[in-house]
View 1 (cartoon, rainbow, N blue to C red):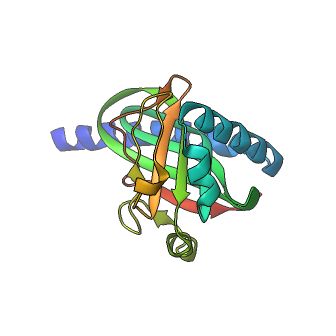
View 2: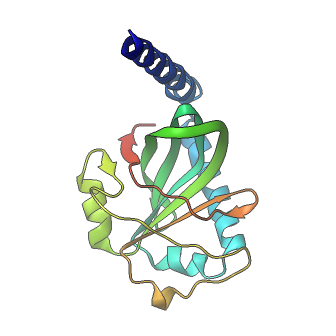
Length: 186
């Protein structure tokens, strides 16, 4: 009987999170033009916060930008965001980022995620997989520098690097592990 109550509570929590995280983005799905505008704003914010980021993006094979990734949780959490893959300042595809988490968590937040593919091989590997999972199909080396700091693009050796930030600046001790990135059509 006790196990049944725990399973029921878990099921109800999961349904509540899925109701919030799963349906809200679809109800407010952004158009291609809205995503493109938000992507450009997000890149400009990254370039403002981190000197050297513009050079890194300019010499990369492509950059995947999620202007706003919403995360919410109450015991069970989830996150969702939509973005665009751009190369040479042109959008080539649209993607969403989805993940779920378990454990102690309460609240909601929004953040931006920028993933830079520094090599054509890394980009090809990403585009070849339908439902690319961070940590399974490829690793993203997160760059942690303070606002106003700079990065040396000659020292970056990872084929895929990422930045996570909000309106207060770059965020530390965060991970993208377990996130699933899938192509969407806009």
